[in-house]
Image 1 (cartoon, one colour):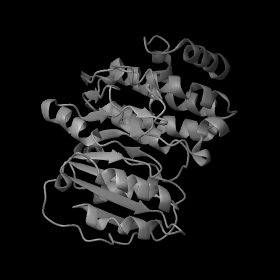
Image 2 (image 1 turned 30 degrees about the vertical axis):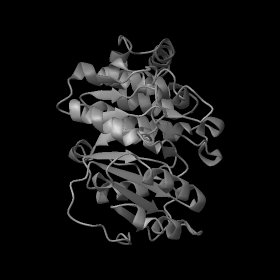
Image 3 (image 1 turned 180 degrees about the vertical axis):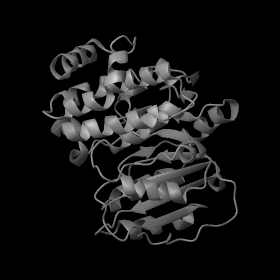
Amino acid sequence: MVNPPQITIKEPVDIDVSIIIPIYNRERRIARLLEKLAQLNYDKNKFEVIVVDDRSTDSSVQMAKSYVDQFSHLSVIELEENSGGASKPRNEGIKAARGEWLLFIDSDDYITEDALKDAMEVAARTDDEMICLPYFVTKDKTRPISRSAFSNLQTVTGLKFEDTKLYNSLNVIGKLIKRDLVLKHEITFPEGIRVREDNWFLMQCYAMVDSIAILGYEKNYYYYEVQDEVALTNSGTPPRDAVKIYLAVYDFIMKQTDIIYSRKIDLLSIFLNRYTKMIQRGEYAPVRLFKHAKLELLRMLKNKYTSPETMDFIEELFIHHSE
């Protein structure tokens, strides 16, 4: 159960972007983020800020509400119970959103003053359904975190996912996504897992977008705060969760009637490249993958996107688990 928004939104207005921010015990960080959003070089009537609180025990909610006068459209949604992750708050944010575009920002992060302006200028002159903001660790950095994913100094538009290296950027942060696309394909964040939930969401979005724009890193757009409690690279992703995520994306892609089979194999190969090491570590996860996706794994062996490491993994599966 979710309480209704605690701040009345002024109606009616045509909104370009819905900025969705999940928070939990981040009173100081949410203040910094809202300060930054209040300074955007963009018409405040044209974007909304949706803060979704996961039952904080500090003053995060009060802090967020204190900024109501600095925005034309600010709402604070309070969950009745702590969900233990970002998935449910983000899903509630999607339900409440009214903008043409969705933008997810973590409460510890912030975007710079030209981020929305430049992204919406691209949106106005292209048919792209996703616009990616290069993100940086600190102001001392001059290159994005995922250098291969955001390697262009100038903005590039009209990209097919397969022609990018966005597989190195499976975080949902800093990506403007058409809300209609998310709703049409019923893409949501999984509420049953607490690791890589944004991978689950974003891989499905990547599969469905027709074209993508990536803003150049000539400007700084999104600053990312590395958080100890979610540093998955330190703790690792359990193989059972990795295979669950991958197979959920597999099922989603395979049921899409408007994606031709050869492209399905392309997408599944690209995503398995990212998940091979995580699945491979498990005792039962590889078996589950093999039984669930045997035919497509065979096709992936000959796919141009499949990495040598993933090919070796698939070959081992057929050697050890074929009946």
